[in-house]
Image (cartoon, rainbow, N blue to C red; front, side, top):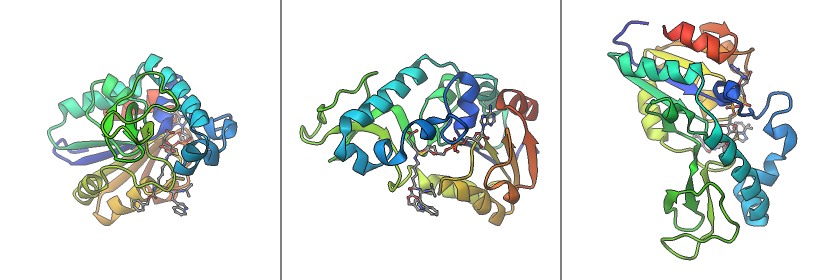
Length: 227
Ligand code: BJW
């Protein structure tokens, strides 16, 4: 890394695993306990909002109680010290990058925010969202977690595309490479001429696209890479 490089870092659930938050697709992960179609689509929320709220209320409480680990802290340190630009993009909704002091783009939303299902108004979510709660702005739409479900358009895509087009280095940390559009970022970065590096416990679905790999737990590999 040259200290003036523009770096884009994508993080996934693996970076928060050592903070005690479950990943989605690892053994025993969230999708082994819940069907995606039941809790992570707009159709699921329309069909059974109480079930969806239970799923996200439990995760909101866990995230609220969780502390950032050495990997989140190392990225915040890097962002503060770097002379170039560090664009930190996370698919995580847990808020741990901010707790570590980093500035982060939330492409899949945030557990700490609520969204109106009708008018798109957003506000701070309470720790426990109640079924039947309506939007404080329009008074009509159902209050839902402000997270991006399957079939919905991720947030800040233009800003992320701009950062990828001008990046010198792209790093992906703790993500399985199974969910698009995030899984396609490595190809976008390569097309821009960036070097690419993956940090993960094991190979991901997109490992083949990276120039370099660092295998191991994020709490060890990320500080070593950063410092
Ligand atoms: C460690 C570790 C440790 C563990 N240290 N590492 C066919 C082809 C292509 C696309 C599609 C398709 N059919 C449908 C689609 C689109 C669909 C999609 O990708 N589906 C796939 C399943 C195929 N995508 C969408 O619908 C998205 N929207 C969309 O595409 O809109 C159109 C569009 C087009 C073009 C441009 C822009 C838009 C929306 C996706 C929304 C995903 N939502 C979720 C839920 C968010 C709210 C919540 O948290 O509940 O996002 S699903 C879930 O998966 C969550 C995550 O952010 C996301 C990614 O998961 P992640 O982070 O990678 O976690 P895991 O568990 O998969 O992996 C953990 C990794 O960590 C593993 O690799 C471990 O090894 C590693 N690890 N411990 C280091 N200690």
